[in-house]
Image (cartoon, rainbow, N blue to C red; front, side):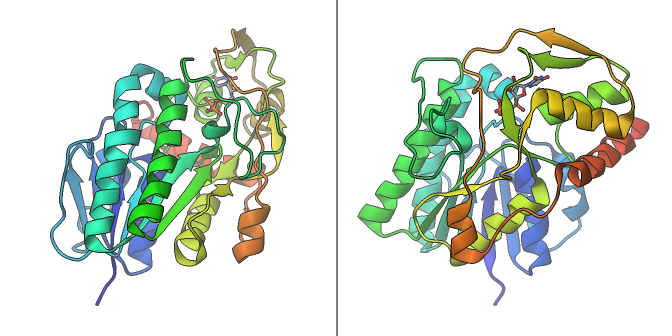
Length: 317
Ligand code: UDP
C-alpha cells in the first residue's frame, strides 16, 4: 500500500516543494492550507494528479483526516518577517493551536510527526555558529516575538507529545532558505533583491548591510527534511547552509549575475539578528546530509524562475 503524508502549509514555498518531492517518491499527499500566505499556483503542477489533494482549511481549528496517515509534516505558518508582522495573531495561533491539532492528528493516526521550526528560535544569537544545544537570546515582547515564541511553543508541544504520548516526533530548525516559487514581494532579502534588480530598482539594504545570513537552496533543504523524517530522532536538527554572507556580499553576487545595481539603505528593523549561521554537524554526522548547491548556482535558478514570472506578468501575484 502507498504511504500517505499530510503536509500542512502545503501551498507555501517549502510546503509545495515537499508535496512535489513526496509525490515523486510515491507517497499519496494531502496538502492542507488556508492560503493566508500560501498560493494555489504553487501546486498547479499537481492539480491533475489523482494521488494529490489540496484541502483549504485552517489547522488552528480542530480537524480530522479520513483514512490512514503515515506522516504529518507541519509547515503551516506565516514565515517571512513581513508576513508575520502583518499577521501576528494568526502566527501565534498556527504555532500553538495549529501545532496541537497536528500533533493530535499524528497521535490518533499513529503517524510520524515532523515540525518545521526555525533558526529564529535562537533570536539574536550570542553563540556563533548556532548549535542545536544553544538555548537562544530571544525577546518575548519584540515585533518578531509572535513568530519566535510561537515556534518555541511548537517545539515544546512536540517534545511534550513525544514524552507524554510517545508520538514519533521530529523537529527541524530551518535557516534562511530561498529558491524558485518564493513570493517576490514577501519582504525576504533574496526575493526582494532579485525583484528589485530585475525591475531596475535600487536594492534596499537594511542597516549598513554587515549583518550576516547563510542561504540554503530549497532542494537541499527538502533533501535534509526527508533524511530527518526517515533516519532522524526526536531531538532538533539544524537544516541550513553553513556558508555565511553579509547582505552587501549578497548584493555583489546579484550584481555578478544581473549586472550593476544601485543600493539604498533603509533602517534596520527591530530585533533583526546581526549574525546567523547554522552548525549542521548533527545532521551531517547522523545521516551525512549537507547542502550541495552554492549560492551562485541557486541564485541562478531562482533568477530564471523570477524572470519567467516577470515575463508572464505574474511576478507579484
Ligand atoms: N534585508 C535587507 N533588505 C531587504 C530585506 C531584508 O537588507 O529588502 C536584510 C534583513 O534586515 C536581514 C536579512 O536581510 O538582516 C535577512 O532578512 P530576511 O527578511 O530575508 O530574513 P530573516 O533572516 O531576517 O528572517
